[in-house]
Image 1 (cartoon, helix red, strand yellow):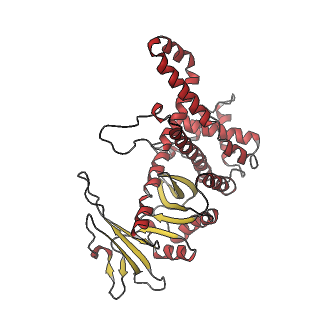
Image 2 (cartoon, helix red, strand yellow; image 1 turned 90 degrees about the horizontal axis):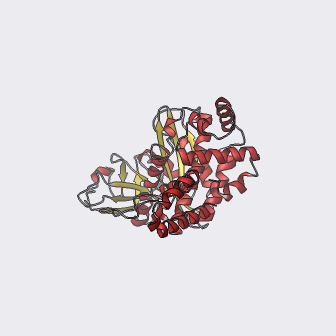
Amino acid sequence: MMMPKLYRNFLCCYLSESQILTLDILIWLLQVHKQVKIERLAACFPLPILYESRRRHIQRFLISKKLNVTLIWLPLIQQILLNKISAGSPIIVSLDRTQWQVNNLLMVTVIWKKRALPVYWKFLEKKGSSNLDEQIAVIRPVLRLLKRYQIIVIGDREFRSVELAYWLKSKKVYFAFRQKQDTYIRQKGKNYQLLSELGLTPGTKFFYTGVNYTKRKGFGKFSLAGYWKRKYRGKLEKSGWYILTNLTSFESAIKAYKARSGIEAMFKDCKTGGYNIEGSKASIERLTRLVMLIAMAYVCAVLEGEKFKRIGQQKYINRIKELGRYEQRHSNFWVGIYGINWIISIEFCRDMVNKLMSLSPNKLSYFQRGLRAMSLIELAVL
C-alpha cells in the first residue's frame, strides 16, 4: 500500500526521496503486521541487506532531525482536517493520557466520526497524572493550529482543574471537563456544597449557570451540567457526570463530552487492538517518532475506512449487521486496515486464489462481483 498522495505531496518538501520511501515502507509494515517494535519492523523490512543493517537503518531514520512532529505532523494533520472539516465549524479537541511500562503519554486529539485523530503529544518524565503546565504545553500548539475552527476542549476527571478552565476561557475557547464528586461549588445566593450533594440520580439531569468552582477566588463563574443516564437494557452507569463548562446549554455540553469515547477507542487501536505500541522498548526520542508513524498509519486507515464505507464495499470487509447488536461493530479504522490487508493478500496468493475459484465454477458470478469490489477498494486507496 502506498502512502496517500496528500502525505507524499506534503512530505516531499521536507524529506529526501530515500526517507519518504523508508517512511512509506514502515507505514505499510504497521498496517500489515500491526507491530511497532523496531526489531520486528527490521525483521520484515524488505531491503536486501543484513538484519542488523536493516535495524540500524530504521534506528537512524527515527532519530533524523527532519522527522519532527512540529515540522511535519502538525501542518500535515492541519491539511487533512481542513479537507474533512470546514473552517469555522465546531471541532472537538480531546485531551487524555495513557501509560504502559515506564512510558506516560499525554495526547491531544481531534474527534472525527467517533474516532480521535492524533494531533500532538508529549511523553511525561514521571508516572501518574499530568499537571497544569504540562496540559497547557500540549494544548497551546493545537489551539494555534486549529485557530480557524470553533474549538471545544474536553477531558475526563484528570483535567478538571478550574485553572485550566480559566486559561481556556481567557483564550476564548469552549470546554467541557468532567468533575469529581468531591469538588466544591457555590451557586448564586447559596453556600458552598459538594457536587455529591446536588441529588443527581439515574435518569436525571440539570444545568446551572453562574457557578463558582472550588473555594479559591479569582476564577470567575462557569456553568455546570449534570447528567446520569437512566438504566437501559438492564445496564446502569456507576455514576453520573458533573461537567464544568462554558458552553451555553446542557445539550451542547453533554454532546461534546460524549465524544470523549473516541480517544479511548483510539488508544485501544494503538495498543493491543491495533499497533501494539506497548510492546516497544525504544528510547523516548525514538518512541516519540514511532508515535508519529502510528499517527500517520492510524489516520490513513481511518480515512480509507470511511472511504470504503462511502463507496459501498464494506460488506466485503466485515459483517454489516449482527443479531442483537444495535451499533456497528467495526470502526472506520478496522474497516480501513483490514480492507487494505484484504486487497494486499490476493497479490501474494493470486495463483492459489485463481485455482480455488476454478474449482467452483458455479460461483463465478459471486467471484466476479468480489473481484470488482477489490478493484474499487484498490482504486479508492490510490
